[in-house]
Picture 1 (spheres, rainbow, N blue to C red):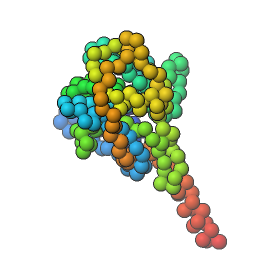
Picture 2 (picture 1 turned 60 degrees about the horizontal axis):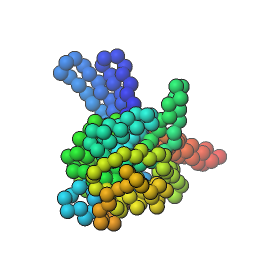
Picture 3 (picture 1 turned 180 degrees about the horizontal axis):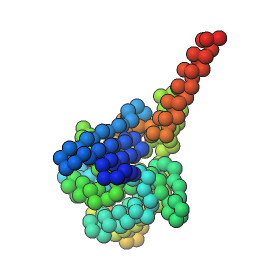
Length: 244
């Protein structure tokens, strides 16, 4: 989430779907304002809760918006070293760009198909530079799970706004954790992730079903503004025609 600080009184932070204003007047008087896009776009995603697991374990999902890839790799390495998280698959979920220093940044998803407790997942995500909304969604989402998109975004008139995520990189690491077979097979077949062999070969469970849901998401500020301008232009054009 990008942040703008205007002196000591006003702070503005924004992501692809929200804008937050924080006005500080003195020590005890604060005003907050949140502007969010309405989630009107239908898509489909995967839940990280392992379906059928007797211990109610979860896979580790991460969602990064407008983040540099080297920061994402650092977060993945931290999870691999500190929590023995295992191999991670990085997916590109939007367009990428480079800053003046040549650093690549953009929107990315990270999937660890290994199994964790719910407490471990929240602890790891809490230390990462993930999207702030993604960090807290599990406490509000009725499935009590994190969700990552696997399907394109389409507007209400059927126009594709954003393609489905695609494979960006695989970061291999050894682990003694059990790996969910359903997710491992999905990553290989849907995204073309190579088979893990040798010392990275997964310790697979016997579970073969993933939780896939249809849900509403936002279209992003750029698209929303353009759609609004087009709609306004069409109305003005109709009014002009009505005059003549």
